[in-house]
Length: 399
Image (cartoon, helix red, strand yellow):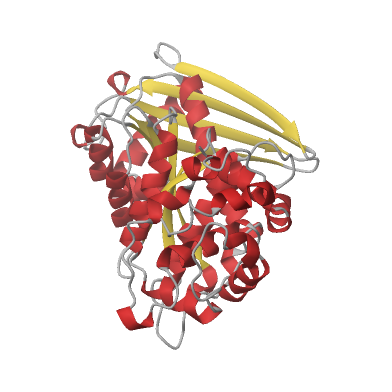
C-alpha cells in the first residue's frame, strides 16, 4: 500500500470517524490492488498507481461518472485523501486518469477485483449465480471502427454482489465469454443460471466439472431439443399431466395495477422419451416449463418458457432460482444504467471502457453491502460524496 497510508491515518482518525486507526486498513479493498503493474514508463510517474486507482474508485462511489469528475473529487477531498495516500504531486489531472486506465491491463485489474470479491464470498453461501451480458451503448467509436463494448457479468442476487466480469471479444459473442468467466469463479455448490445464448453443451459440461449445477433457458438456438421438450409439455399440459410424474409450483404476485401468475412444472428427463442429443448434455436431470400470465386492467398476456437443469425435479426450488436470475437485470443492469449512467458513458479509449466498467461494478458491490442508510443507491452516492464518515462506513461494510 502507498507509504503513509498507515503512518498518517492516526492523525486523520477524527476526521474520517474511525475510532481505531486500523479499522479502515483491516477492511480496505485497496490492499487487493497493490499488485497491479504500472503501465507507465518510469520517467512519467508523477503520481503513484495505487493513488490513481484509489481516487478513481472512491470518486465513482461518491458520484463521479467520468475523468473530469474524478479529478474534481480528488481536488475537493485533497486534505482528507492525503491522510492515507501519498499524493507526492497532488491530485492527478483528468488526462492522467484517462491515460492510466486506458493502458492498465484489464486481466490483472480483474484479478485484483476477484481477490477482493473472494475475500467476501468465502464467508457466504452463493446459492444462485446469474450470468448475463450487457452492451455499453455509447462505447463505440465510429472513427476507429470500434464496436460497443459487451460485458458478461456474474451476479449473486441473494448477496447483491458482482462476482466478476468478462469482455466479449470483438469477433465473438457471449458463448465464448461465458466459459472464460466461469473459469475465473468458484462455483462449487452453486446454481448457475444463464439465458438461452448460454444454453450450450460445452457450458453445461464446464459447470458440472467445476461442481456446480446449471439452469439454462432453452429456446430456438437448440431447435430440435427445444421442439422435443415443447411438444412433450404441450401434450402433458393438455392431458393435465395425467399419469406423468412431475413437480408443480405456483406463484401469484400483484402490484402497479398488475397481477402476475407463474406456474412451474418440472419433470425428470427419465420420464420423457429420449430427447435430441440428450446424452451429450452432461448432468442433465430435469426439464422445466414456466407459464407466466400477466393481467393488466385492459389486457392479459401469456408467455411460455423452457429450461434444462442438472438439478433434481423440484418446482419450488427451481422457481426460486429462475426468479433470482431476473435480479441481474433488475438490480445490476438497471442500476448501472440509471444510477451510474453506464449507457451514456462516452469513455472509449483502449482499455478504458472495460476498466471503468469494473470500477462501476466494484462501486455497486460496496454501496449495496452498506445497509445502515436506507436511501436509494443514488442517495448513497450523494451522501458518500458529502460525508467522509459515511464513505468509511461504506468501505467497512464489505469486511
